[in-house]
Length: 298
Image (cartoon, rainbow, N blue to C red; front, side, top):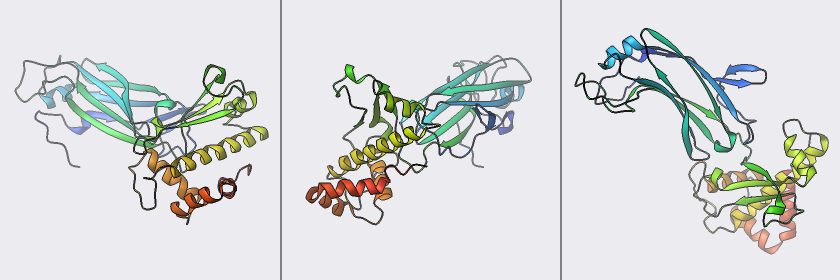
């Protein structure tokens, strides 16, 4: 394994013994999988990890004084939302091997795409004395590792919120509204938001019961899915940059719309579908209904 050449000494890799991240569920804990295909933006993630740090060897290997303050830090990054933040910081002191239990809660509305979890043993405060080879700046990394988790499957997913439409510019009796940004190069998770009208009891209940939907909930969810797909495809077709052969960066709005188009209309060209929408909007709507398989519920 290649190691980054740093301008200061770092201890051996095995001074930190880190167990695998564990996903905490209602049924207990399980080792974090490679992907969570059923995850959605209403689902927060509770994660735990047990770590053991050999402080004596960490200090000796990095030429730090034995009273230099160290911290075990966990940081998360989500490619879908382009957000990053601290998950937990645990100060470490003493001698010998010190156990640390990381226990973090990540909010689903801030996540999306690929979730990266970085764990690092860092110098908590700057140091002015000691060996010339020792790390001196606060935040100097002595050890680190990364674990990735894919949160989105093949289905298009986006964040949502339940609000009172009477306090907005949307029609009071509308059941839902999909907000979508104009920039195709912007991050998907910052560009799309599904709003549900809390005063529409049928729609609000369907999303509340989405994990275990009743028959009526499945019908509502199917209708919302079809309408969201229609809005997204029509939005894409209004952009000149959305064309056959176009390439967009991963997890951008353009890439999401291109994936949706290819999923719903495999083998079709964007120019043909745009022409169909312009010349026969009624047929285009029916084609879209067929593509999303509206009301085909289990």
